[in-house]
Image 1 (cartoon, rainbow, N blue to C red):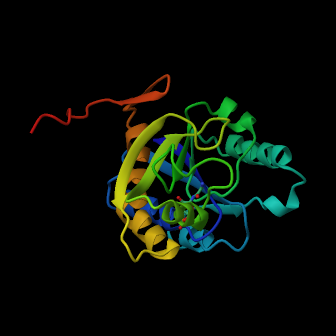
Image 2: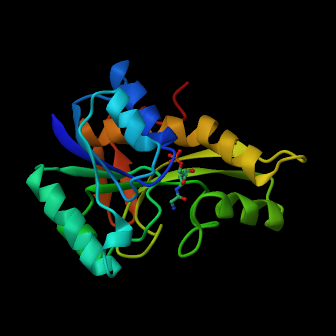
Image 3: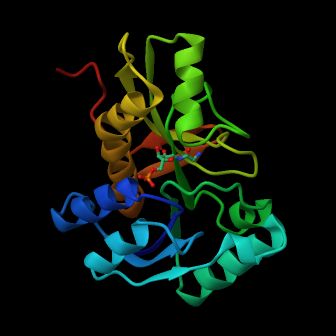
Length: 215
Ligand code: GAR
């Protein structure tokens, strides 16, 4: 079993998708050892509680800068012997020390098709607002390995979602969550925990996947 920590900041629908997928056996060889929230007010904490998963707050507001905060997160990840770290709606860019110590072991979900609408300042609803303002017809979600630069690491899975004419940031966010994020995040976690991801530079090879052209 791969000891996995999930980092959250808010509503926790991605956490819920992970917990549901674990419950139905869709994520293999994974144990969530702790849910860590950057805020005491995150509803994600109630979701962890309801599922009987250990959870704690490491409050970002009680740390002087992101370096000190990242060190506190790393101390906790070591204490719980986490092998894999999942950023599931975690709204802060942590210092490079995390991705150096956990190289190719931090998975992030981003609510757009990277490299569009990503990087510094693109998080939560802002991503969908920017996509609508730009006028794209297709958006989606990306799951990738985190590196020192925000939203720039090797891509594991992507799922496209159509933009509708009457979409608002809120309706688009909901559809991207339901049709993309909540599907590809649990799948990527399972692939990692099954040992089926091989990182070769920027490319992630998925072992045991049927080539798309085999019908
Ligand atoms: C999700 O859409 C997630 O992809 C996004 O915030 C939302 C959190 O929802 N994350 C980012 O924008 C990080 N760059 P959730 O708390 O319900 O999972």
